Image 1 (tube, one colour):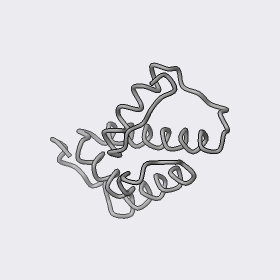
Image 2 (tube, helix red, strand yellow):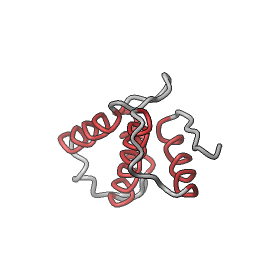
Image 3 (cartoon, one colour):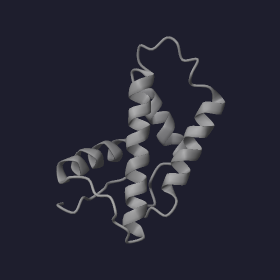
Length: 106
């Protein structure tokens, strides 16, 4: 966590809740075998983010990505991001999870 002195918001209980949300979103998503565990994803995002707001935004993007993967796995495509947004999201998620993600255009 770069340059953020007051980390009182990042309590063990808070982290457990975030990890549980990531795990819930991850259920049903077909991810590669070498995908990092949810706790490592959360820790990576925490260390990469500079502020609480940036942390929450990255967590939200990760959860959206996992939900999208889960929907795609179950052939339900009720929500679709524009191609440019999917590509941007795929790049960020690849960085966080360590797994590659192919968009439809790739």
